[in-house]
Image (cartoon, rainbow, N blue to C red; front, side, top):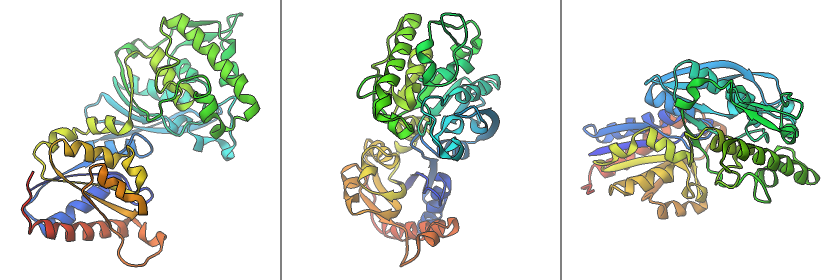
Length: 383
């Protein structure tokens, strides 16, 4: 029996690899001769860097960068064992959780620190980038990131514009004379589940601006600033990407990648991660696949990481089992998404605090998986 394990993290309790290793221990107790492969899993959001670095091997880099409101913050990213692939989360440099006292700055927040983080990795030899762009505090269209990478955005007097979306309608000339020469060698795999365009009623400002402090009466003015930036960009690059799916992601950061970094692609985060971990190769001869996350519910079935694992596993005819800390009433939708059966790992009545303790969660995972595989060991498994 070959079992492939790809567990998402149980937020606040177990990392992806901790959950996977706990499940492996349970299988070994019931079926000691099983061939077991543990892979990291994430959806491109928070925890993706840790999952890939810990699961695939690599190291962490911490670098001081410019935070969303110009404050200095320490951003941590990973470099995988190949030495050329960097794994990043833009929220490490421009995330909403980095706003001092949680106070939004919709007009002034910048992605400059994201560019500094990318530049640091380039200088360390990285040429492949996996970047999650969720959780942003910004609406600057990615201009800050581009400035850090060497692009210039100047006004009619030749002066460089300042930070934030408030400055975007000042752009009259764009240049790339100071762009790092290695940037053209880099490929960017952007984990993004947002499909909104840059401008308009379905764009970055109207849809996501309120989450970042944009008031209703400010939307039209800010959207007009974004349109001016898009027009200047199209004139500079010869490509109008404002309506591309995902251009409005992270306050227009998606647009910046589309327009200025042609080697960039925006894809669902789970697809990028599944490709990075080489899951398809391991699934070709797998009998059973284990996945899971902290809470299984209808949202799981709507494109979250365990559903992505299940969909890929079904291409190879494997049995898919999922384990979770909690199972919601509507979790039956997971069965239609390819998960053949799912199981909660919590034993008996307990407090949430106790259940989420790492040592408790790992112990419960091992026990739950062990019992399921005692049954599997008694049954013929056909692929």
